[in-house]
Every structure is written in structure tokens, then in C-alpha cells.
Length: 357
Image 1 (cartoon, rainbow, N blue to C red):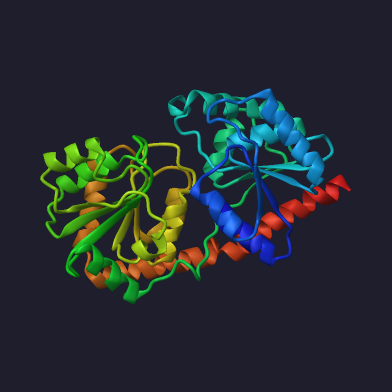
Image 2: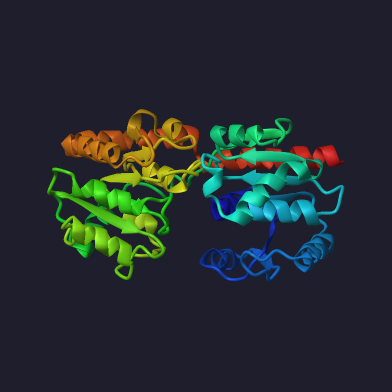
């Protein structure tokens, strides 16, 4: 989302420089390749330091920005502690607090620190209404806060029957098979194991599961165990981390977001919908509003409910699933078009800059 938003804002004449807490990462190379100025503080993961905060402050003073935008908790808190007074600071919060106890210790501490820094924050942008309400409940201010949902490049994410044929041919998927897709790093919260279990009890031998994400590959012993236990060796495709999701998405018939907690507005849900792939999602964050009547929403951490939703999708004709996909695409066009979302971010930045002046 951040990369695509940055491209749109640049098209609208916004000069942007980026400062990351840690070096490296595949996303960082995309920013460099696109011509953005990107620096880093050199922090070690999970090890905050006073020296890092002083580096951030020096970088801000050297750049003299009109607005500082923190993206996600670690960067927000770091900017809140390091930014000099008088420079407008906007916090972008993309997480819901459905199970705060399950968060990593440092993340919990950062979330709890947030309200104590409110005097330094000019504006809060939440990616979902649920996220906003969760944060209000733990002391984040209601003033100067708004919800701006994720936006999607509807020219990049779109249905292409030629790509669909390519994907299925390359992966050995027959046209009569129903492909359920999943894309997330391997994590107990993302519930890849539960999704495999749901497929295992599904009375639909033509259904296959296409799984993408860091550590979601043939070296994952836990996934291999559950796949073998359900006799699904030939019906689960593990691709690991990929950078060609626009291509892979076209090969899917249904996308499944099976997370147990913490989701606010899953990016991949909107990407699938824009590609005319109907979705099944657990009822977290604003997912019920996002999916609407274009797919199915089920209870979190409930394998039986997930299986029933998958069975319902299998029971539809290909044309009925395609119609759901077309409705999903229209929903994204009407509510989550990246161009309009970028305009809203631009207005926030202009407003806080005007107040400073």
C-alpha cells in the first residue's frame, strides 16, 4: 500500500523522502528502483535505542519537511519521540487490537505508549473503522482522527483470462479444478494450518489450495505434516514468497483470508476483489464491510465455518462465481480506488501543514 500510495502522490506533485528504521528488504529496493530517496537508521530488529532516535532527529532537521508521516507503530512512535516540535506529524495505523495479548511484547509496549505521545501527533489516520474504535478504547484521542481505507490500483489488479490460462498451465491445474488461494507469511495467526484442515474435510475432490508467502513452502515441516495427515499432497501447492501476485491472483477462483485475529483491512483481500476473485474472509477488522455481498465472511478460528464457506463456493456454478467476482471488482472501484484514496491522504497533509502555518 505505501509504495503504490507514494507513486500516486508523486503523480500529484508531492515530493517525498523515506526514512526506514532498518536496512534492507525487498520493498526498499522497489522504492530505490522507482527513483525515491530512501535512507535508513540502521536499527537492529527489536532493539530500540537512544542513538537511533537521535539519528532520526538529525535526519528530520536536515530535510526540513513540511509534514512527517509515520507508517505503522514502530515508525510512528519513533517519529513521535524524535521529531522536533512544530513539524506536523501524522500517524498511519493499520492494525486492529482484537487480541492485544497475542502481540509481541515490544509491539504491545508501543501500542500502549501511543496515547502518551498524543501532544506530538497532529493527525491520526486509521485504515479501518474497527481499528479506530479499538485504539480509542485504549486511550488514543478521538480528535484529529479519521479513517482512510486501503486503496488499490485498479489498472494493475484486473482480470486477464490469458494470465489465468498461463498460471494454471504452469502450475498443472486443470480448468475444471476450483482453486482456493491464500497469500500471507507463515504465522499461527494467518492460520494456514486451519485452512489446510478445512480443505481436508471438504467433500469436493476438484478443490485445490494455492498457498503463497514467506516460509509457506516445501521446507515447512508443520504444513507438510498437516497436508500429509489429510492426504492432500496432490491438492495443496506451496509456492513460498513470490513477487508476481498480480499474475498468480488471476489463476485463483476464490481467495481465502483465514486469519484468527489482528486484521484491520487486509491488502490482499482488496487485491483479489479488484482481480474479480470472490473472497472468503474471517470476520475481523472491517472485512465484513469490505467483502459485502460479494463473498462470504465467517467466524475467526473456526475450521468448520471455513469449510462450510468453501463448500458453498464449490457448489456455485463457474458463472455464478464469476458474477461474484465482477461485483467484487465494482465494489473496489466504487469504494477503494487508489486515486481517490491518495487524494484523501493529500488533503490530510495539506490540512496539517496549513495549521502549522
